[in-house]
Image 1 (cartoon, one colour):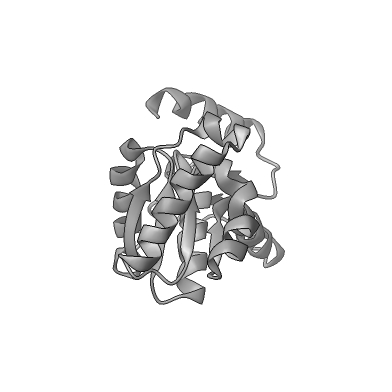
Image 2: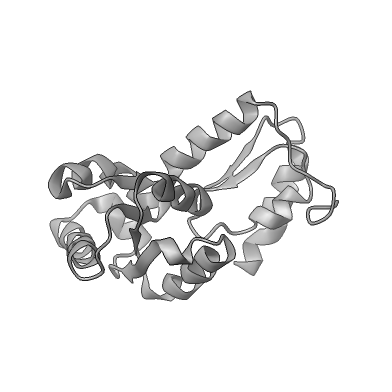
Length: 177
């Protein structure tokens, strides 16, 4: 994560006229740092997905790719004040690159974690915890008959709403330049 920060910040600085910035990594890498270098609203797809899910279900579960992501996603949920709304973060152990192939074994691994989240953890909605899962939202909604939230779509929609309302990033304290 640290190795991408320099490039991420440089890119944001080079695009000061951007209407908004969507960070397309589910663990919201660099969101706070980018907010410090731009006036544009900056939204991470993880944060957007969690807030979106919390608006349509009292409890939601997160299904992500690799086990190593679980601790970071749990920490973000706590930081955003939404941990109490989350029934748990489950890893499918499907790599991001495997998602491009849409192999049945990968889909079944994700399905198994969604099933466990709904049945064992008592989630009422599912958040797909990886930008690479964006194409799976409608498939799993149809299969499981519960809301399935994709952070990319939710983040883009929220970013559009913030932009249309003319809201910029606050630099009053936390996100000072």
